[in-house]
Image (cartoon, rainbow, N blue to C red; front, side):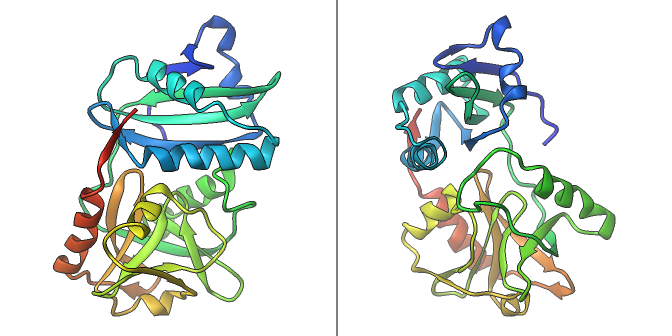
Length: 253
């Protein structure tokens, strides 16, 4: 949010003057976001699978994965490191747009989360139109928090505005069993060396966990507070989660 986009590509080529209104006008579609380092990205196959599944659901059409990769490469423009977003939207047909911005990472300090009652529409799809969660996230600092954590009417948690919430009990990773987006980093950890399971979780269930954290393409960041609940992370436990993620191989984009 608020980062300058340096380069844009459309349908496998650098964007031209005729494409200037495309990204702004595209309102119906889906996307994936990734961090590129040294021309490589973690979980490339999962990013492509996400785009493929969403395209089938939203447009009832197959997705040209080579076009996706070509568009991402043109957006990179030879830059080895960047934040890349690939958008598939509808305007005079299905279009592939890729943007490249400076690389991004989580802050060095733990985050605090404000529980709010909210659920994204079609939460399993990373779709366009993220105004509600962005607005809620922007309201969190006024209440003394870094971000929000979505809950349902019964108090069960799902996800933050831009990330998955997880915890580690010293033996296995725990994720909310709730309607939410399965983020790429979450998926990589679920498929990794640490045992993983999902179960319904309320804020109170996070108490006493050796590590509570958020995950997205930026990596893993600890959570120090959720509402009134203070959380003290065990550094060794958090290191095991981070090491599991850092051990994921990088794929050439």
